[in-house]
Image (cartoon, rainbow, N blue to C red; front, side, top):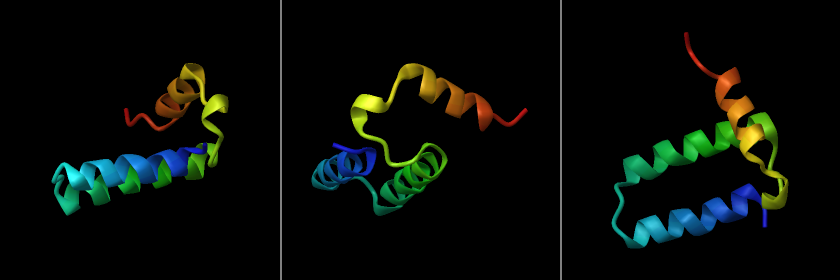
Length: 61
């Protein structure tokens, strides 16, 4: 399963739970940025170090 496939499942769950459309759009935007930066990897290829590097590279100082 890829990051975007997992996102689709997560988003559907949050819609069922009644999350605001605005909140879901904000989440989707962040997910798109992440996927643009690291690509739509298979979940097995996502590591804590990869996510830490992504967050560190996008940190505003």
